[in-house]
Picture 1: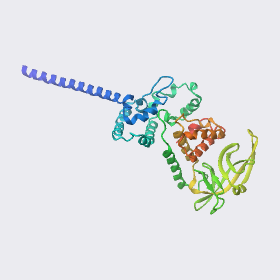
Picture 2 (picture 1 turned 60 degrees about the horizontal axis):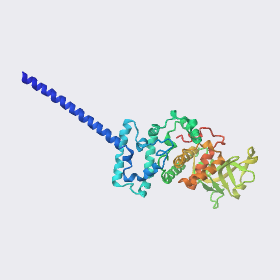
Picture 3 (picture 1 turned 90 degrees about the vertical axis):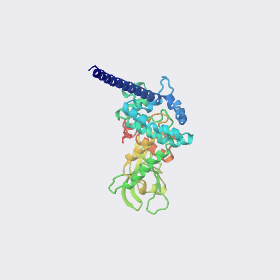
Picture 4 (picture 1 turned 135 degrees about the vertical axis):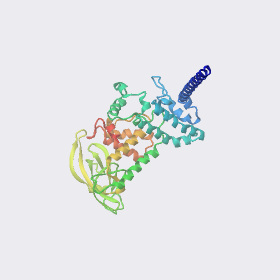
Length: 391
């Protein structure tokens, strides 16, 4: 009987010992795992790889590395979400970075620049999807003293709050130099071009997606003028690859070579040669109260290439908004569109152009977008910047 009791006691002791051993091993594994996760999220670990030399140099030149408040955001603060599931998934996905280091996919400046856009767009997409979770761990709308912010931020943040925008919509170049956006810019233009095939005979108004010449009659060899992007046209009929349409706009007294989008505003819709100037019809006139100049409401019927016309001006504005978002955030957040008048935007865009990857056509579309949503345009509202980014 004593023997059986001893055996039973030994079994319980062995079971207890096994359980305790399992708990200790489990705790060691958890502690070890947490330590490994923590250490591999440390900035020193992140930048220890040779391929991180260039991102490190960009980061060290940013406000997140050095600022007047002495607050430094490390790599994990911006790239690793704190929520447990997202944290774990991010750490698992980081295996690709280890693979990239081993294979040397970005170990030279040329390789790094070649992959930079794809890497940046991947990060932007993630931050857009999680509502810029890592940004909001430090920056919260409800904790902001907006009146104490700089003028641009005071104007932009109320709009962002009202439109439920997320941080990455406006702040894409705060820690790293923006990549060359040439291919991204071109992709948006290609998407616009694809919409020209969807134009229907019942569409009431068409809009030009790019700068293109037009003629007064089908088969004419010499162009009669140049149509500018976003210009609205009232279609009349289609013949082959051309669409006959009516273009309306405004001309300043004595300046007959240009049609503008509004009196007193240099929003160009078309540039005319002498033959098209003679075909103009005057629909009415008014005096600009600010400049005391006479403006005439005019119309021109001409033939335009169908390959540059789509039925949605909003699609053009979305493309332009994306151009602004991806090309204008390297030095600052997005400037509210109603911060300048239509005429002021011309000089602003010319000043910004050399710092971007925008070509002449893209700059023209972006300028027209800003002008059409400027502070002195009838349709402009205080929240125009937010409205322009609705998708």
